[in-house]
Amino acid sequence: MIRFDHVAFAFGDTLVMKDFCADFEPHAVNCVLGPSGCGKTTLLNMAAGLLAPTAGAIAAPQTVSYVFQEHRLIPQKTLQANLDFVLRVPYPGKAQRRAVIDTYLALAHLDAARDRYPHELSGGMKRRAALIRAFAYPAAALFMDEPFKGLDIQLHAELMEVFSRLHEQDARTVLFVTHNIEEAVFSADLVHILGHKPLAAARVIDARTERAQNGADGLRALIYEETRKWNKDSGTKGEVSARYANG
Image (cartoon, rainbow, N blue to C red; front, side):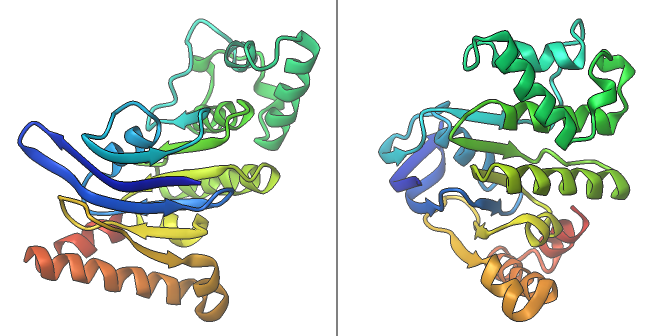
């Protein structure tokens, strides 16, 4: 489990967290949803050990894979060589690495592209490669920082399907930061809804139960109700809900 226990954190004079507590369920997709600038990426970086709290404690796995908004493939290496590069430490045997690479290339339907360089891959193929690179590395947790931001509708749907397929095969503990409600509706096991700074707590929705009882529309409506609370608190009169609906 990833746990924030009465955590405080500030950037200079800006207090981001104040006595913040949250538990993120192991082996589940924990979507973290909140207004722009509320501290979502800061939370992710603190869980990854990239930032230290000024007070409180954070319990998190020692090994983490990260999916960024950019694919970050090495341009001088083929797709297979990019995967091989990050797997050399956890899988020192060449045959073992090749078997892992073959498995994940097949899951993402990238077998035929293994010998292509990044500039020879489409945008969607690069994003799929970034996903399987993160899943192929045997980390206990997977952190995703708005990895599908700015994609067209078709490509977005394709990558969400790939992510879902990968997680079915390997149920990591996932922290998935997003500002897009539809990503949470589609993929989340739990939705952790944040308010404005300074963060003190998260409203947690069990998306699995809500979908089973009321369907995707019921889950979507419940999340929208929380965004209306943000609007009421901040006086933005609908701005936040519109921003989330549009991704």
